[in-house]
Structures are given as C-alpha cells and as structure tokens.
Image 1 (cartoon, rainbow, N blue to C red):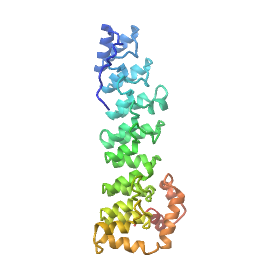
Image 2: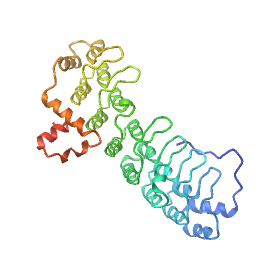
Image 3: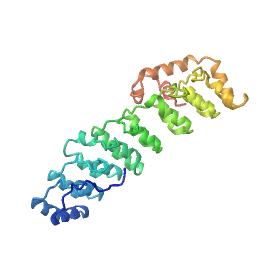
Image 4: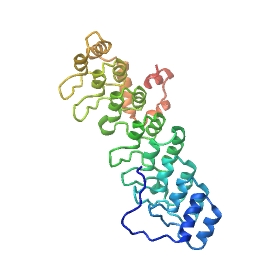
Length: 323
C-alpha cells in the first residue's frame, strides 16, 4: 500500500478547531471527548486532508472502542481514502487487527465492505495474504472468508490473494485459500510452474495434493512443469510431478519432450535423465491410472472430502499420496 499524501486539488475546507479536536481524540482513543463532540453535531464522517475519515484514524491507531463508537454513530465503513482508495478494513488487514475487523464487519453491508477494492484492485484479502505474522493473519483471513470475501479477486497487476501468498511464501495462508476454493490453476498453471522454477518443494506439494494440474505449458515456451524440472536436472521435482500425472511425452514449442530437455543439459547417467527414460518408455501401472482418474473426477475443490469415501484406509492413503 502506498504512503498517503494529501490531495493537491485545493478542494479541502479548513477544519474547525472542534473538528481537529475530534480527530485528535479519536487517534488517542479518548472516548468521552469523542462522544461529547459527536453529540455537539460534528460529522462522524468528516475527513482530513489525506481523505482519512475518523474511522480510518481509529483503525490505524488501533482504537477498538473508538471504532465501535464511531460505527454506532453512523460512520461509513465503506469510505475510501483519497490516495489509494482504501477503506478502514484495508488498513485493519495491513496491521492484522482482527478484533477491529470483526467490529467493522458487524455494521453496514459487510459483503460490500469485505470485497472493496483500492485503486490498484487490492482487497483486504490480498493484503492479509501478504502482511503480518502468519498465525495472526490466518485468523483474519478466515474472518474475511466467513464474511463473504471473494476468493479469487484480481488486482490491476494480475494478482489474486493466492498469488500474493505464494509470492511471500506464506504456506499456511496458501493452504487456507486453497481449502476455501482458490483456483490452483491460475494463468494456465502459473502457481505450479512458479513452484518448480523456484525449486519450492513445499509449495509444489501443497498445490499437487490439492489437485493442481501439472501438464499446462507456459504461454511463450510451452514448457510444462516437468520440462522445467528437467531443465534443472532435478529428479526429486520430476518424480513428484510424475506421481501426480505429469505427461512424459508432452512437447514444448520446440517439439522437445522432458527427456530431450534433460539430455540437453545433463549426461545420460544422471538420476534425472535415467528416471525420465524409465517413465517415458514404460506405461503407468493400472493402480496409478486409477488413482489419477479418481482424483481427476473428484476435482480439486472436493479433494479435501476424500475422507467421506467408503473405502479402506489403505486406499484412502493411496489416493492422498500418503505413502
């Protein structure tokens, strides 16, 4: 979120002394003066030169009681500042102020507030996916989702909350978003290609276990995740991808298979080349094909419900790749 700067269009009226006192009282959490000044008829929705409302000020200064008092007096929770177009809930997300967010979402149209976008397209869910201690952020994230937050809103620079969490390697946030139905196949498999390109085994495991498709080719080169693993001569990544259904015969835009890519960067006696030779020239077992088919039919949004299937524990573990 950018730093706030005052508007330069000269449209701001000079604040009265009482208005300045009210702003100061809100920032300091002084309930009695705030209540008294509001009872004198001062606007609960007044703004400072930055476009900050009183509610913005109460949130940024972590004044929970003032937040509640302002909302009780009719403060607008959807109000946006002049610079970034951010609501008080955006700032609550930035500083991971969960209790304050709970109060805000009890008033006004919570679904409208929870999905409000700044001028850059950021929602509170984007922000909390990237900010604060992850343990605290998880609680805030669940609050937003339970309050009707859209799971895959896209910013002006093409990011969803899931991509924000991936960028900052916030694995617990990634898991939570995926459990709530975030699209793991964004941009034709961008998350999984990112995981492989960055040798991020933990991210790759989360994505694959939650049904990410592993045969999308990149938009410019046609490289699948298995091609990318082969380029790195990385047998661990290649093995994991193959277990989840990677196609060894897929070709990139240069008409190369993963094995041919691996041979172009490594000797034939390396583990990665040997592995790709074995799986390229050998058919999958019927057991493996059954697992891939069942997982595909269940779909990534329902994989977390595999436990509901009436099957043996051994088969359940096999479907979940727990072996």
